[in-house]
Length: 295
Image (tube, rainbow, N blue to C red; front, side):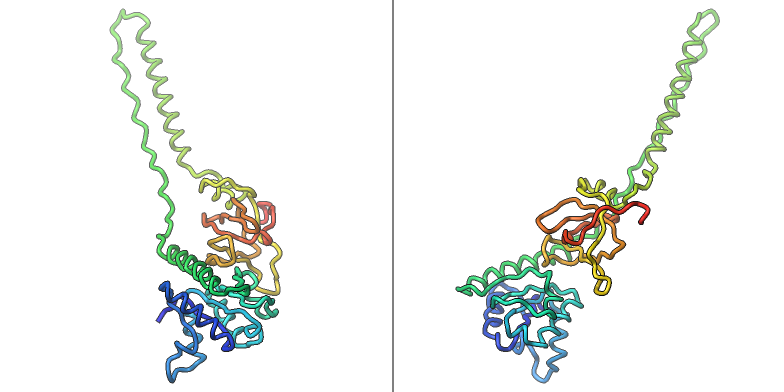
């Protein structure tokens, strides 16, 4: 059975985990929490793995006990591998170990160590409902298809020349003939304008900037690219749906990615990719400006 939230916690923090679970389930959020949802006779490890992979979000009850638990580290790693967003719910004023920090450093923390803790459960439920609603909206949104190019109709043929005037009509035959030639020239010019206008514009130096302009945005920076990547680590940054670490990861941008920066909010920047997709990237990982020859 698919659940909305997998509650990751140390057995020593079971009281907090059960309270958070009860608050979420009162709002209709389906939760998976051990040992309650481990089927009798089933493998504990297999049940944990299956539940994480089948959940939309992981809630981490973070404390000193979680810091000291190898099992917590394995569950967090499994969630990251399957792109399950993680919400750390910190119930103690401490920092994560290096092992945990590697996986959850970009997550949006919710501090719950100041009393009364009951009010923190409601804030937690509000945040999780928002994330789940965003996931549902994005999953149900139709795929954007490129708009068909506008259809250019052929210009109407030039009108037939007037009949030749009879002899003795004076200079009017020459005037009428000159007018017919002018009309024909204008018709040919209109046809060339339509034909040339239907051709695609030449490729710009930055496809990302062209995509931003096509979408109606005004780029702040036309040619940008990822920096500060760790070549010995994952060597990419996440393109997210929202300007925070809890946004859904839409793609991975490697060192060769290029994009246009169209908006900034605090430490986050909204960028436009050459294919028209847009999302949010941490401003700490944005550089400017790469020459077109680097494409």
